[in-house]
Image (cartoon, rainbow, N blue to C red; front, side):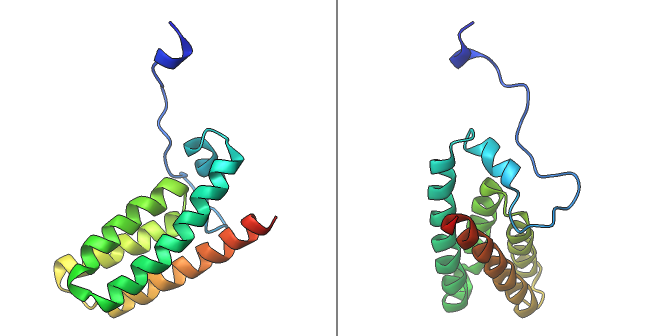
Length: 124
């Protein structure tokens, strides 16, 4: 069987134990197949998108659930699991009618931490 047609026996997944960084770089490397240029491009796009989505959530509260869902998926894709968890918490708060202010504040903080880590990586 050619390498292109071989079945993958593993699926990239979040770490089993918490990591100390806002980004799981091993996960990112698996998702980009170790392509460092692609990693940098994806990180830069995520940093921009995260800021736009959080701003849109504040400006368009009726759309906040869908925007949080979108951010959650993007964050999981690059290994920003704290951002994904915070976006999920906001999504749940919206769905259940609980106070969203705390969840949105936690999401903003997680995004800020991820962006600082991304900026450090991109400057290296």
